[in-house]
Length: 177
Image (cartoon, rainbow, N blue to C red; front, side, top):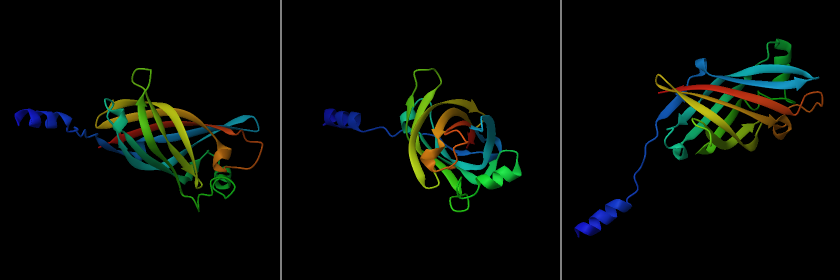
């Protein structure tokens, strides 16, 4: 009977608990850069919120659920920002949030870097994306950084041909307990 209990105990899965963090909007940023008529235009989004479960030793248990306020777009030019909030671009009145939810996180071949896979949703269009990110420990959480590119047409953003289809996104997300 002792051997059976030891065997049974050895087969019982150990549940690992991954620390959960909340995004700190005031310390986080999402930036973008796109060419418009051949000139780089950059901007940011605010109103970031979400939860992140992450342990660098157990990336397979990580979960990222974050979103930003589409109406917070800021390129530094109010008239352009108003135009980008309209239906042909972000349609922020109808689709107020841009969201990302991870489906898996893996170790990268580089030290202190991971690969995240997930679903990015804008204007009710979802696309699977993946990109590398880093996670630097902070006082009560992490600073997550990542860079990736998307095709704006995958999300029905702007029908004009004077804007590049390729948009570069940069993430600096602080998450704490």
